[in-house]
Length: 156
Ligand SMILES: [Cu+2]
Image (tube, rainbow, N blue to C red; front, side, top):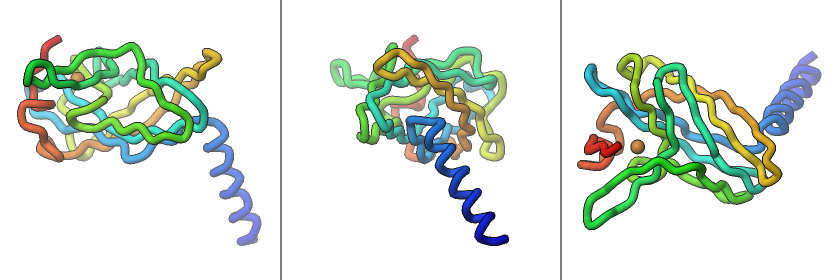
């Protein structure tokens, strides 16, 4: 009985891997305060073969974009990018101060006890699209805070 259970669990794990060509680790979203309308989601993505993150959406936000942060004349700025390349076997980190999934027009504050549902859309080299649904747990507002970065000199 036990053996069968283990075997089927292993099969399940294999299935999950086969269904998604991208491994998603350490997903989190930054918690927000009452009037705050935007926040960022962060994670580590490892693709099995060359892939691009091309879109994201969430029922918790009116608009979701893939953003990049960079220094522009000494000022950290963020901008939307059309896609984020995920080279095969290389872990790409979305983190405060770097790439992130930007959630804007938030419908409610993001609280620590409410994971945010996120749908990520990946596109393979051949143009095949794959949707992956995840839940991003919220972390405290000041988690890994970067002064002046995500804290919001937002220039959209
Ligand atoms: Cu942003």
